[in-house]
Picture 1 (tube, one colour):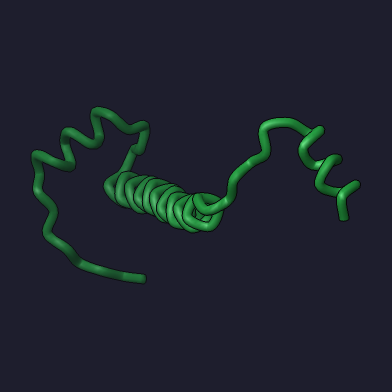
Picture 2: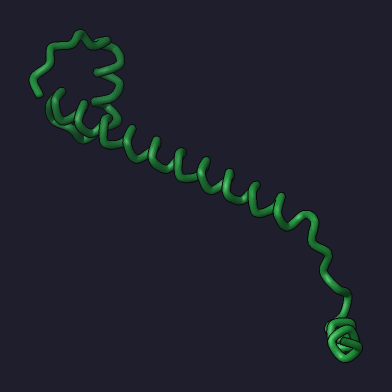
Length: 78
């Protein structure tokens, strides 16, 4: 996709110092790829946190028995 944009020269200069990119195009492509990686990871963590909260909510009402022998006694009495 061909696009003309005006970039902040100071930002480009600083990014080129930190990058191995030889051209502005390569620098922008690297920046976009990094953005996609970071954003995908953030969304994955967010979805995981949401699912974890749901499970914790469902489990909050459960009570675990103290000993396995309690389970056996209850089963025998039935």
